[in-house]
Image 1 (spheres, rainbow, N blue to C red):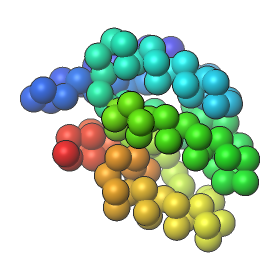
Image 2: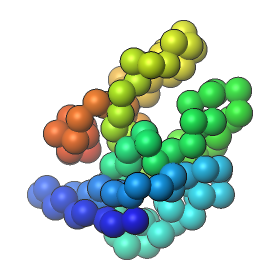
Image 3: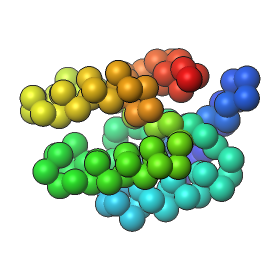
Length: 120
């Protein structure tokens, strides 16, 4: 995994770049959050391809637990990917509600991710 740093004003944003799955379970998400938090990142950009498909099955609870931890630590999370392939009404509602609250965003491009990351 490579961490590309985007510094915008006082925000230190970590863009995670990898060809492998970085989050396959809640523990992976927690460890990743801890590592980035202690490196003083307050915003994280990760790609959908780096997250287990089980994350996007809300019944597993993985998404809820990981996103709650990011929220508790006040680390903003932006996930970049093509979410049109997900046909679950509940998951699509989850994306919409998350994007409204601005703490966790689901976007389709890196530029959208950086823009979403800079919104207070």
